[in-house]
Image 1 (cartoon, helix red, strand yellow):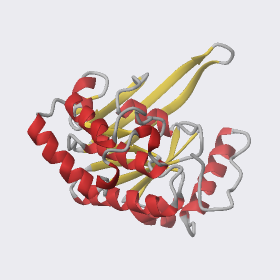
Image 2 (cartoon, helix red, strand yellow; image 1 turned 60 degrees about the horizontal axis):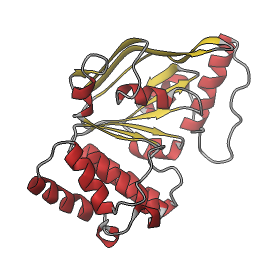
Image 3 (cartoon, rainbow, N blue to C red; image 1 turned 180 degrees about the horizontal axis):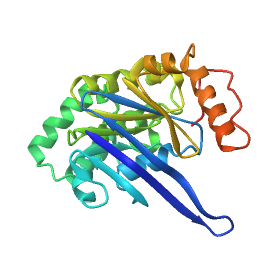
Length: 264
């Protein structure tokens, strides 16, 4: 499971002083759940995920991932998570098979169990038709599938996906969402950052809405709509942003999009 308690992260801006990217955030995600982390660009989503994956250290607060503290036992956390970052590239000179094998070896997997696991994953993700294609020759959809494969190769109990459908066409995005849903059914603990309201409604058991580094609301989509008396997640999202701006005197909330999205 993931347990986040009063998590904060500050960065020093030499012109404006210390700025909070994440401010007193708390939430829990249990096995068999997908927590949708929803917010506009710059809200603190990626910073939160980077703390959970031990890329960044928190300024204060605690985060326990799969029974390990991200600050006190980062190597223990890394052994028990799969982190798919929106900014992580695919190695141009490796084939899909070589790439996934390389990450399996980094996790200390032995050759025979690794090969068996790879055969299962390549079949599951329908990657066999491009297993020998170099990264430089892969389509966006191929790269995204390869990224998922290397994220789950060591069968971690906790999975963190940072906008995994970004840039994908609708058919590949649908496949990716289906596979993440299947991972939930296997009992994985999953955090899913997205800019799409539709993806949250379709996939997530719980949602946490973050804005300007602070958690504005958390719960099941249905319970939040009832609590704030809103007709859908998009209206809920902008209601919470408007409320935060009014309470905190923040300037300029995001412009409402034409489609059902909330920014990256």
